[in-house]
Image (cartoon, rainbow, N blue to C red; front, side, top):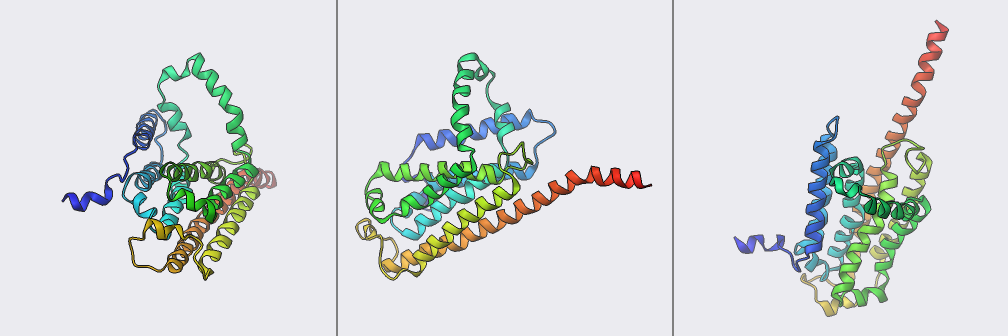
Length: 281
């Protein structure tokens, strides 16, 4: 039984990951119980599933396998850079998390800290900066010379994992904001442009990996692969993982954003159309 549970156990236990996930769950559920009307079930499912995926990517044997096969690392980064933050931000958890915080966090010292952080957070919500950070998190760790150091350094590997997640959150929070402009920072057309730029970079990068005929990451020969897969095939499989899963995610989000924009436009024009019809009668 222990051997069957081994893949679910941490390869290197991190109290930071465990604490962050548990605190997020507790605060969210506490805030959700204070929110009226009740939060949509799909939002709660998306939020908890996003946290579960982050925990799985960072605190199971997945982390070990990602350091010994390139395609597994790409799958891990798809979760940390794409699927998990998209689920978290798409759940719109801000109101529930704010209501779930202890009241003592509203004291003047904490309030001053929050005001000091307002400027940097506002900057991160700039669409151009959010896209730049997203692309940086996608591309920087694929640079072969840097990858050589990351794979043989424990702290660099952890820094990579956290940074991949952190650079994705501003992007997805802007794109998946369910509110209409100006409550949302990005206009509908801006969100679609953001998605296009991010998807273009992802497709070009994954195509380069898939079509490559030489090994760009010889460091995996040092780390050792746990499957008998040739280096170039491992690299090409990593490109396929990026291409297929990334395209599926971006396509789903694109149609979600497009449909939401159409609904908001119809809701905005409905009163005027009703008034015109009433005036005509």
